[in-house]
Amino acid sequence: MEKEKIYFIYMPSPMLGRSPMQGVNGAGFFGNLFGVYTENNYISKLKVELEKRELNWSIERDNTESDIQKLIEQKARLFICAPGLQYQFYRGGFNKKNIIYLSVMEYASSITCRVFKRIEELDNERKA
Image (cartoon, rainbow, N blue to C red):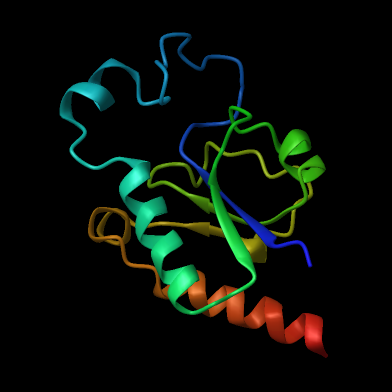
């Protein structure tokens, strides 16, 4: 059985006015200079928890530059957005209940409670 996919979104959606100097990780110059936490820390913690709980879910770092159509084509079931993306990520019809916008504290401390709560809800919906 194929695993359900979670994508970690760390860059704003492509839009007019977005800085072309986003850099490799999308943080831009100041994000790289002052950023202590990276999306890799959060993703690693979530992977460990998913394996420990033996859930049929996988987490991946967004590889589409936040292109909603490509993410939907890749069969994304849940999005986790880094802090600050609440008004910069175009969801384009994707169910807003399946997008989790992390607070700075959740991101910095790798707190995954809300993610697992939503996974549980989605798994229960599928079984019903």
